Amino acid sequence: DAGVTQSPTHLIKTRGQQVTLRCSPISGHKSVSWYQQVLGQGPQFIFQYYEKEERGRGNFPDRFSARQFPNYSSELNVNALLLGDSALYLCASSIFQGQAFFGQGTRLTVV
Amino acid sequence: GEDVEQSLFLSVREGDSSVINCTYTDSSSTYLYWYKQEPGAGLQLLTYIFSNMDMKQDQRLTVLLNKKDKHLSLRIADTQTGDSAIYFCAESRDQAGTALIFGKGTTLSVSS
Image: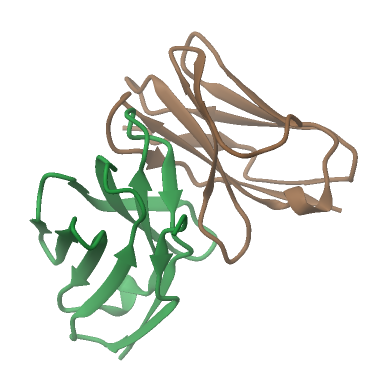
């Protein structure tokens, strides 16, 4: 069984640019959540989507947005990138109530 | 407090037991989780416990939950060098059980 897949695995962007990260959940999982993990810290919750609707949002600025598609895959968009947005971005999928399974993450470096 | 708290570092010898402790924040949290993260990798779900349980055992892993003190622990029996990693405790505060609040992680170092 394929796990949670994220793309790309690494990318480098310049301050002020925009970035789109992608996530495909485990087959049969309808919920996708996004987390930001800054080096040396635990992951911080950004968004949760279920059945294409936003079901939860963490304490992140409006520069962060996301959406979920009919096939339950998801995209995370970050506009006007700042140096502080450099982090590992993790996607997790789950059945609505249940254990969250994480992908390998996308390492974003903003220069 | 508002944060999930863990000790930052634990060092053990191969074959010993490791105990990683965590204090969580919300007594109404439904699920409590332990995740493992190896260098440069994502998070691997190790085990979880539902809030109405006191203990859960899964092979070398034992999770103990003290709801009164909001204390969670993970015991790894017969610790191996391959267990060296960062271990995160996480609680879910929402009804969906998927908006997780993580601690800063405990780095486990296993020496042979």
